Image (cartoon, rainbow, N blue to C red; front, side, top):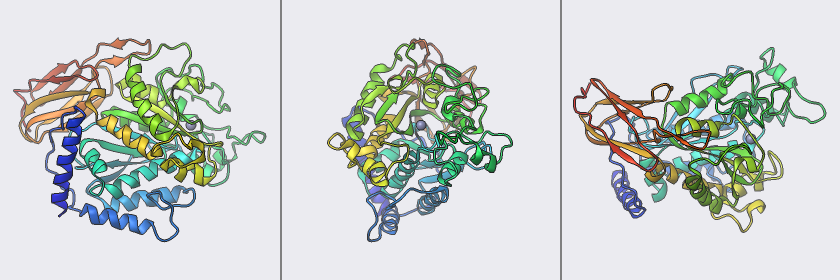
Length: 468
Ligand SMILES: [Zn+2]
């Protein structure tokens, strides 16, 4: 029954996408050993387990903010219930205090290198901004509960690989949720690097943390520029060097190793969907029209206006601006609504996720949940990224790199025609102009340069590739 349902959903998904002038992706998946799971039964069981009488309407049914153990338990629960579509991996670098940073990957054929575009959702890079952690975790649970039961979500997980990092900054989140410094925003880069030292590094007047690096100023594009602090006590201290911090290196390595076509960083509070540039002196990006289009769809759903990042205040060295100018990934920051970084639960989390909060009354259509679903759709929409197509034997491993960068992704072909959803090789420069760069597609025995712009598709001749 499950197999039949999945086929029907896949067909419906293909038709829906065809209606939007998006060709359905060709499966390019080597057969994988994911366990067979009855998606309908597993999703229903998850939902029932989380919704006894009195539970909230959230996928988790929760009625209060999580602590770090709750986030870990929720991730474990969906990975256990849906091992066929959910995979949890630790990002490569442990935090300053030695904690793991889990990333949750959700997609059909989750363990395949299948060339799907990636949607990246990040919470808790600023650890006092709890609603972002809540929304990221709820969205992961939502997908796991509704795959196979909701046609739209099922079709999306056929086309897109979703990666959720619920807490980018677990050391800071532990100090913030632990009550030592509720306003703890930065990481725990303190001397000595201990939790006790991190929890004591507090400004007695403002209540904010003094120690640590603002991870969202530690990225390599515009590092050290306007809107980032040079003093370690600054709330937006950028750190001694770009990527000095293991937590920002995690996001760098994740983006370098995947084709992240759309990326959302969740923050509080500001009621805005923000996209680059973050500096008043910077020109608009060459993708302003695309940003405006995707931003308008988000704004309609979550009820927050679509703005330039600098309209909130100037920033430099942020995760999204780095990803955009390095890979062409369409990076946004969503400043969730509120009147505090972690405001009253009902309006800040369930009301915000579902669009019923007092903050967005009459303006939201579906809330942040709907905005994120539209973002996943944007991540899967080839008009917003690029495609490489070709023909190779089954089992051929292709590697996509860009000379002079660390960008490297792989695809293992199922055989025959393949479609690889990638970011454009032509890269948006910080001067507002596109930079002509090429990808290199390599297989054993052959290497081909490919120049492709946003919305374009390029066929490559890979005859001569050895399959193993
Ligand atoms: Zn923030």
